[in-house]
Length: 196
Ligand code: GRF
Image (tube, rainbow, N blue to C red; front, side, top):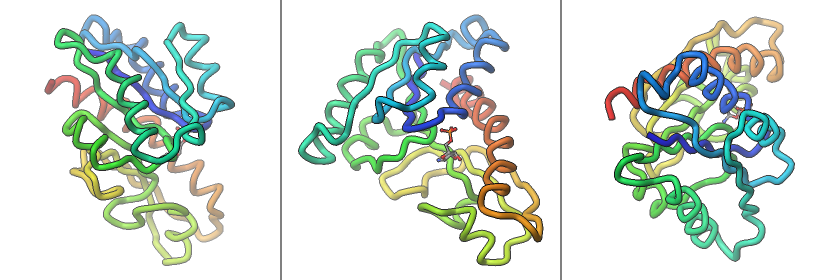
């Protein structure tokens, strides 16, 4: 099984999945490996991590395409280079900051996952941590879910809860949540691959 991870930035969730896959020998236990990391930003810090771990990387700049459909078609073509009957691809969104077209989402139905930094169905969309603070939430967290065409609404695979403390800023809360993301995302990907 080939795991293809899509990033836009620091890629710390991607790195957590790569590290866990190596530490736990997913190649032996699951027949799975992180085959490629694709970024829509050439300067995404996560690309260096992937390269230094011998993982194929590719940059697809969304600004080079006339519209969303054209970008998604190019993205699918890049991903499908890693999708064979023997090695079906699992597409992992890890801080990938582009909305995907229904055509793309449906193409990878059941094998496209995302992590969102809130306890879905609360706070879909952006600025989740500030919105949780503004709402007076006492807990916050993160959700791993299968991706469906409606943004941040697919079936939930895993969640982690953290306390939201009285003096939290969006940044301190984000850091607390991110620590948990790094635990639940590799675990959820592992469990999904086990079922494949
Ligand atoms: C994470 O909080 C993720 O949930 C959100 O964006 C952040 C990405 O962080 N979608 P990283 O690129 O994995 O470090």
